[in-house]
Image (tube, rainbow, N blue to C red; front, side):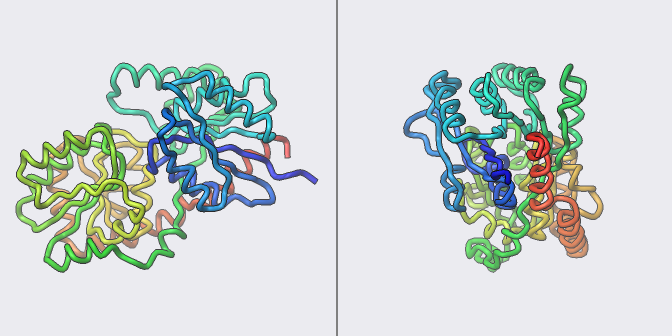
Length: 373
């Protein structure tokens, strides 16, 4: 009788955002008779924490961190390699250019298989990041499988020499059960609504690629409505965004809440969820909003269009177009029949196509076939 495959999910220490929550959703739904999930994160400093590992332990999974003295550390690679050997890891499943490189170097000469799931590429990256992402794509042919989570990402990879036969599309999924089981709505959002304001929300990283500068500029033009905006998350762009809010005189209307463990309770209190991103795979935050029956206004880019059709499942606005975002926000908030349609059709679409259970089942099948089980 075969033992369950030991699959190490190698993630980031940057916070609990799309890729990290994706990992948590995935491991919850594996059949324990077939897959034994473990979780690891590369941390850049001895004082760094890995929220992904902390949350994994809360769910009952083994989780470890590997300290790296810099962006890439040979010592950390050796520690990862030793862990793989001592724990008889069958597969490393990595997520992003840094973990991909660690997984590749740590498994040279070992029987351990390596799989990467790209979660998206940065739109207009700086020079350094562009080099890292190009390097990531160049090493994909050395992996056993590369598993993009959207058709758009798949299209960016099919022409890489030596990779086509190793590609497998498994579309993104969301833990709908986690959302349905949560009955509480954040008291903060209830209080705002009782004061007669709409609640406009964003959840995610505060970085340039998320288009929050466009979001804040659009809010500044949304003068015909009474609203409050909640921005949930952390990131390097926060100081710049706070200055924008102050320059527009929106300090009383826009709140930066930082990382919030109760993000879903806050989400359930939104009147509309906004994702102004410049690039996405299939955005998990949008799937969560749709599953929570919150109307979505998102940028008209391939990743968002996988979920949002602009008619029934949610609203799309022209990328980086402040005026169009302002217009679509107002139209969505003021039309109750449109909001009801987005709620109903959005949740049904996610239920049918993007459950975490379906995603886990497909990965289970991939892992087992890779090991000839």
